[in-house]
Image (cartoon, rainbow, N blue to C red; front, side):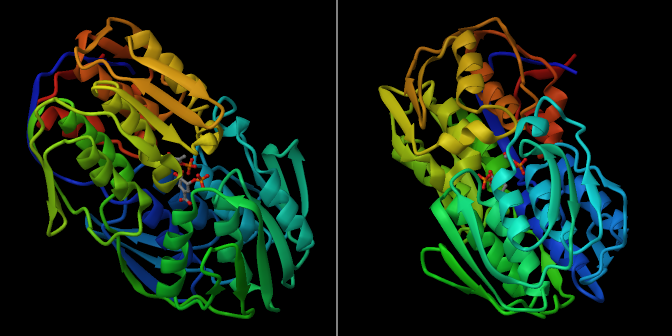
Length: 429
Ligand SMILES: O=C(O)C1=C[C@@H](OP(=O)(O)O)[C@@H](O)[C@H](O)C1
Ligand SMILES: C=C(OP(=O)(O)O)C(=O)O
């Protein structure tokens, strides 16, 4: 299904932020790894979180869900033998479960999104699992991937962090369950480092002990631990809400978003600081963000690695800023649902934005007068491209038609409903 985004001068109203995708996937996983019953309040509902629900059920967890919460009785350290797992298009779910697959005899991860997740690299994680004795069949580091566990014991594991933090998170979920102690050394750089803070926070809530160096480049993990059943409450999601806040920033607006924790470990909370740096009038108090946009923004320079999943929304806001903005240290955007530098900037240019790419940078020459629009946008299977181009469409002279906009449901199925509730002129066709 496509969405038509029409010029929308103003937005107003209040919405509750969707629930965090990253926390939901993690809580589902640690609940599945516990022996006993855990409860997760306000879990996210999206294709990615549903993929984790489906896979942990296939591995033997028992799930009961109502409108407010989900109770999960876990399988502990012994996942049920299952031939195949289908993670949909969810990168984090795949990588975390590749780690857990090392506990089993043989699991094949199938390739249902050959044009998106099917193109993403997993070699660095495969190398790490092989160090633990797993046998892995793969297609040059890509799906489909078969993992035969081989009863890993623990020990020293070296993993590269230069492409994704998800490989390290996968090892942090796996190693506490191994019989012996482990040491994890991160090689090269660690991208999306802040996300490791979310992994460690959730592991601690699940009763797991991990000794991390301050720079997150080295970890000591005691073996033979047990995940404890617990109650969890999922906080609001900054990456998705960043798109709503950026939409409010580029229009005349009076928009309130609730459930956004000020002390959150989500790096994408930086959307607040970046919009403030762009001189967008906003406040953030008592977990409520209030934007009173006037459509005027100034350019910004920002290290995007601190807020990986909000960069596309920030770039969309910068399209209408006075001056030239620069988002640097963002090379790993190339290894997402699409190449979020080349593919995204191609679509932005079609809409009339003035953008330039470097290997690890996005440069935006702002157009405060607005862009032409009037074109069809290829979504590249990427929810964040869809959300970001919608922001641009709100200030395009002619409508933007975003093809296959239903892929927004990967993380934020209610995105267009929320925008419509705020008065955006968007319609499904
Ligand atoms: O661990 C996670 O849940 C995630 C880590 C990040 O990926 P990278 O570490 O690959 O940048 C982020 O972009 C993704 O949406 C979710
Ligand atoms: C990149 C993302 O997710 P994943 O890596 O889990 O597919 C995202 O949500 O923007």
